[in-house]
Length: 67
Length: 298
Image (cartoon, rainbow over all chains, first blue to last red; front, side, top):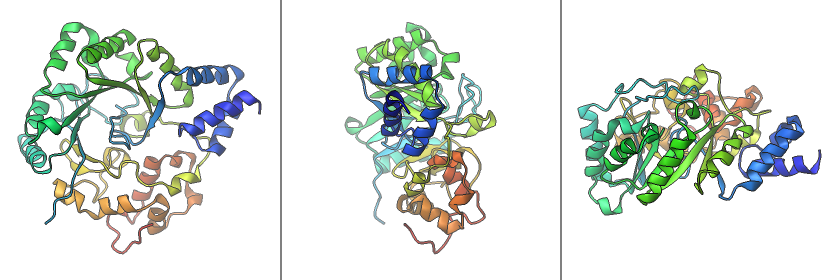
């Protein structure tokens, strides 16, 4: 796995989007173009990207819903 | 009897929504459908007066279809100076400035707006309207953020377009196979089952939600939107706070709940990497953890 995919996998794990094992599987399935597109979004973000839990409420008592 | 504090009370004042997003947790009804009854409003006002939660969160459905009910509930709070009012909306009113002024101006108090916006909502609301709502909230000193639902990490690409509108916080949420999303076969995709989820507890174990027409629950996900699981929803806040279900969910990891109902991790599929989907699997067994009498916590 090349270094760019390793970086992306690390970012996905740190965001809580995947476990390490699933991040490895996921980035392994991505094309080089999708890898670069995702990295550009995640590395270019000026504000923190925060994952919420649940559906209508988030785990932090902040807002969140799927609808 | 000692009263148990509730930091935040989430309220679904109705399930009506003008949008028909294919990933929605609620099946939803057109505008005006499924709203709080007079008895429910009276119960909620009494609950708010009694418990004085620090925050009220209105979500849906689309809560701005129920402005009168929201106003009545906020007015019932005994200490409005210490109250935070939060709103999760689809932003349907941001199409023009007059409508935006009318809706935001209708709140006697509004501290935070979270806009649900993603590739599904984008079928109904333009990016231009998102920018308009962001600016209107900024002008009124209302905190603003966007919640983007993901079916895969590739959906994160929308963040780039949103950041081009302004420096707004963006939160992400995985689409769960709930309600209309389930009907449409939509959910965040996991390559394989992730056993780490077994160590987790319910992500909403400290929350309380009132669902229009249903009652109080800490669940805001699979158990309340995907069926009628016994012991999960309660008619009063007091009953819910003291329920076996709430105590069990606050104290147990999913591994413990699985042991209680005799489920083996070998029976789980990739989608059970999600805590909510796993929870539904556990409660779908013949021995619901909400009713099991002598289960140990873990």
